[in-house]
Image 1 (cartoon, rainbow, N blue to C red):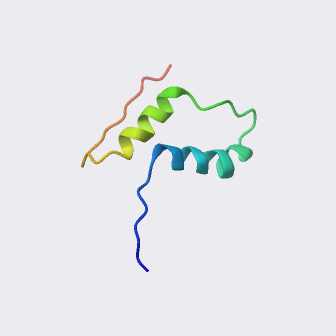
Image 2 (image 1 turned 180 degrees about the horizontal axis):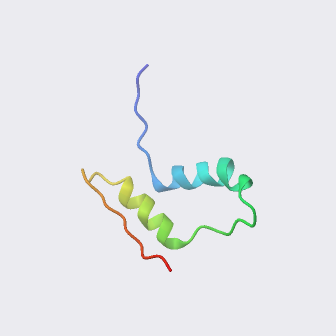
Image 3 (image 1 turned 45 degrees about the horizontal axis):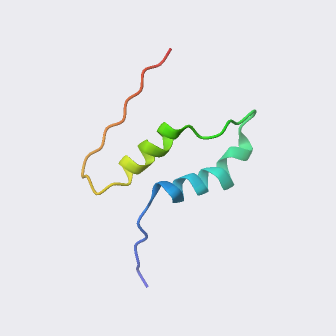
Length: 55
């Protein structure tokens, strides 16, 4: 049984919510742009680049 599961933004958010957030001090809700990035990264596009300004 070698089935592949398509990674989706919902799966990433579910994993982060259930497994990662509890380890952060003062965690805040995920911003909408995170969901947009996850959707881009899970798309069928071969190459995806994500960039954000800091400060």
